[in-house]
Length: 157
Image (cartoon, rainbow, N blue to C red; front, side):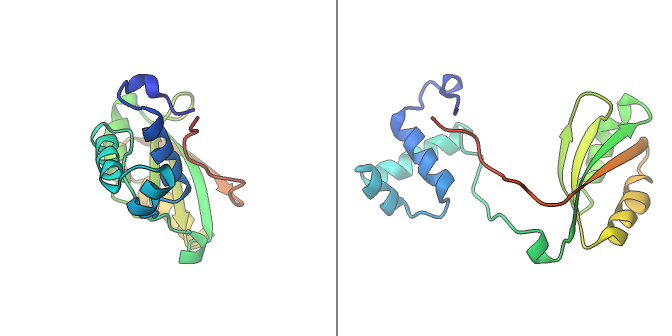
């Protein structure tokens, strides 16, 4: 559930706005206002407040990897030769366009990344010719995604 304890200024109306925007991020504020039986200006003010407080991180278009020519999607764990290399490795990974996510993780790996590649050969090139040459990378383990069972946003009450 959406944790409103971290933001004491979030109320029922804010939660409803978030719920509606999560269902359809392109809904016009005027339609949102009509559905929630409030003024259009109030919706604008509330969304602005939610953005400024960091509750809403932003709005974006979600692209379909396969429809855009990326047939191979993997999740790859990266071990480091020494812990001190983790931050500089992350900065270098940011420069590789096919790496679309990078997370700090605990356990065997220091970093866990998501790679989209045109095919397996391109994936091999990304891993061996771009990732493995980064100073401090100790090794990688990749897990090929056969498809997404589901993806969803944060739970909202």
